[in-house]
Image 1: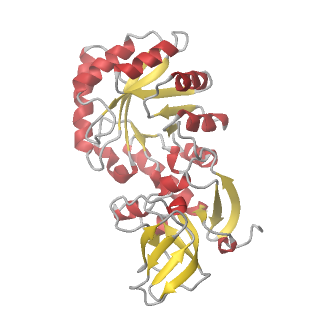
Image 2 (image 1 turned 90 degrees about the horizontal axis):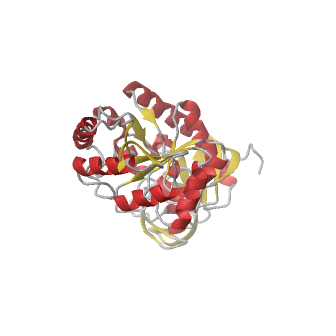
Length: 355
């Protein structure tokens, strides 16, 4: 394809990424983090692309966050050498891979149980201790210790292992619960101080409440991912507008069975079935009154009842997904453009890296 070609000449479904918007989103968030006195450690699950992680680092991020070892390996291979893994790592195969990765980069992991810590302790030696953070449940009700006292006990257990080094606390909170994070971290910090245990990092994160991050005054690191692209859920949250959404899924109308129904060639394998509280499956940029009522694997069914103007068979239209992060794991490649002019195709290098 000619680099001057319009993205509308692409076969569909295709994931379009506007690089101008990406750059603006990175700059906006890094500026906010700098003003808030927070170290940015973006989560790369949103894009899974080393080139974009390097953009974030060049803007001022101190390192990156990954969820799984095989994902982190891709970024280490690309030369990124400061990675936080925010997942309990266990099992012989994963621990062996973790140790190999630890030999190459500055690596930090999390744990919320003695079971996880003991597996790490059996794997790593005193010659190069592994950095470990205690994951805390400050209301998100996913992983994490349930109280500051439990956090202290795990920190002490980490400190007792020759091959491990306790470095801090980490949480993934519910949106807009900065006061809960502050209270949990403050109480834990007091317990650690009384036991003469140094706590280097207080890490919190999440794009849904990113722009109130400064309210957790004890935090010194923030992890967010979705902001680089933005999506419909963040528009609803008030953090951006549709014009700040860098990802569009380009689709084709393949059928108009009735006057009020269209069918697109992008189903759950392209748009994701995540609702995130919406009743439909994405925002139709070109026909805002249209409603994507259902997805099968390869088809999206669109209700056109409210549309004064309706798309024709063969027409290409753009969708902003409810949840952009999932879409990145559905496609081998993205198509980067600048204001609609195709620039280049990029491989989603960490796609499918799920362990």
